[in-house]
Amino acid sequence: MKFDFLFIIKFIIFYFLLYEIVNAQNRYDLPQKVLQGDLIISQVIGYTDYAKVKIFKDKAPLKVSKNGYFVIPIDRDRKNNVLLEICKDQCESTEIIVLKRNFDIQEINGLPSKLVTPDEKVLERIIAENKIIKRSKKIMIDNEYFINSFVQPVEGIVTGVFGSQRILNGKAKSPHRGLDIANDEGTPVLSTNDGLVVLAEPDLYYTGGTIVIDHGYGVKSIYAHLATIAVKLNNTVKRNEVIGTVGSTGRSTGPHLHWGIMVFDTYIDPQLLLKKYN
Ligand SMILES: [Zn+2]
Image (cartoon, rainbow, N blue to C red; front, side, top):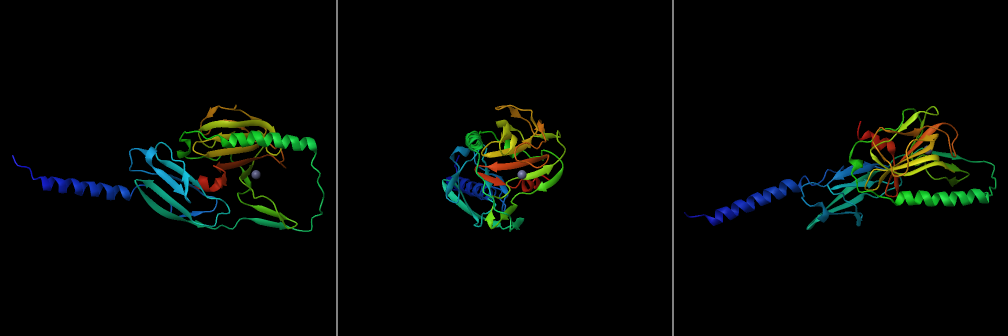
């Protein structure tokens, strides 16, 4: 029996190239444009071993999950487009356009200037609490909870949106880094997704009853001004599980939930996150 080796080789090369072309077109599902405050959740596909896949965002390495998932938060003030490189053997690069938003900016002038001397005891307390908060922010678990859809932790009236800012007597205050949802004191607050509780503090100076939940690979949710806390540090929670109740603890003017989403060190807009699933 005689084999046409040349034919076989041609056949193999043809299918190898076809496979490469098909896969090259489907290696990731990325948006062409994103808004400031948005979160990109994507997955590299077409590889068998994701440990060898490297992703660079603006030339810096990005964490890739065991199944090829990665997240990119877009800062409220980001002006440049996102440069992404996905590498395994060879690199493919792509640019994502960042669209500017008009955030609600309130300028208030002519306020009586008052000298505030911080109470030494309060200052000590704030410094000690900041250490606890900082520690919780550093935790990053390797669970892919963030690939499931996120839910709104409580219904109610939105009294504060992401990105709004006040300029008092010409001095810009830090922008609002979450979503304020007002509801009656005692209304159950649900976990936005599955995760691990990395902070559960009943009485922080600024944020009162506070919970931070880690959803894996840098994605965390924050719940502040809670009246009660129903979870403990290191508890795992399920999406829609009751974690506490709405309150007005800490520096708050009325019962509401301050809900924030932090990805690595960047706060993103919870309302844009919810839109992905509606
Ligand atoms: Zn708030």
